Amino acid sequence: MKKIIVIPGDGIGQEITKSAVEVLKKVDEKFNIGLEFETRDAGGTSYEKFGTPLTDEALDACKKADGVLFGAVGGKKWDSLPVHLRPEKAIFGLRKGLGLFANLRPTKVYPELINSSPLKPELVGGSDLLIVRELVGGIYFGKRCESEINAQGDEQAWDTEIYSVPEIERITKLAFETAKLRRGKVTSVDKANVLAASRLWRKVVVDVAKDFPEVELNHLYVDNAAMQLVLNPKQFDVIVTNNIFGDILSDEAAVIGGSIGLMPSASIGELTSLYEPIHGSAPDIAGKDIANPMGTILSAAMLLRYSLKEEAAAQTIEAAIDKTLADGWRTADIFTEGFKKIGTAQATEIICKNL
Ligand code: NAI
Ligand code: MG
Image (cartoon, rainbow, N blue to C red; front, side, top):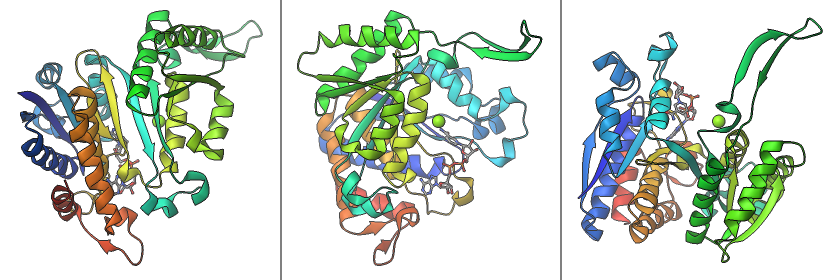
């Protein structure tokens, strides 16, 4: 049996994870993977029941699971709580507790949705890239000072960017392994012309690359990478980069595709890995059966691919989404005149039929 912990969370998280589980169950019937599901709470939903956004029991259940499927957390109702009780705390608790060291975000431009991209169709058509971001190191976790007085008597603040060789090796290996499952190209993004931590990054990436002769490697400075993403996104297959550069570039890459409702992600960990759509809990549309479940369903496909090594099953889900779009079915977020408008439940039903 393969145990999956499902954490719906708040807002539309409840609806979209339900859709993804339906799709996974249907896929399991075809591929006999032996999936078993258990649900846990997180975020505001957990706070209401247990007085904390993430219980130790929920975290422990995740640690023992073969994969975690996460919806989203957050809502106005809990915004005024003290920081340690806010829904977002659940995300950090899971990242830390599960050792989620890498975030994988694919950006795929669907031919049917090409006109929702802010970029010209001829530029983005056929783009299919994946950003591998280091998630637990670098400047977001380095030593910092919020305020001090310098020699000139002025107030100042500082942060530090630190990376060790094992940290860089771990994320780089993952990027190369991932590239082997795709088109076999890795672009490493750094700022080695200025930053010492980036120079070490580049050296380690070059060393790791020697173990992957079948994968092509190139390097870009982050400023150039930001530019290349909008000039010619088709040149990229896998991009590997540090925490802060990955944070920025993955948001830039996310808009190329045109709809956040369609974008999945994976956070790869030491103990288990967590899969979630990139969007939030969308309180404005929660409970109305209009949320797009595709980002979460595609996250479930990533769970099959990366945690369970069920590539054929993952591709079956991706193909079913392609077909649903190609047949003209659209949830409200991607609906334009001339297409067929559907809600969350109906979209799920159609995707299941298309498996
Ligand atoms: P959001 O991503 O929830 O929503 C932004 C806009 O996109 C809204 O208009 C929403 O209706 C729409 N949208 C999002 N997902 C959609 C979907 N699947 N189908 C159709 N439309 C969709 O971001 P926002 O509004 O900034 O945040 C709302 C709450 O979510 C906040 O409490 C925030 O902290 C939380 N959040 C949680 C995340 C997580 O759990 N990983 C990530 C981002 C935000
Ligand atoms: Mg960000």
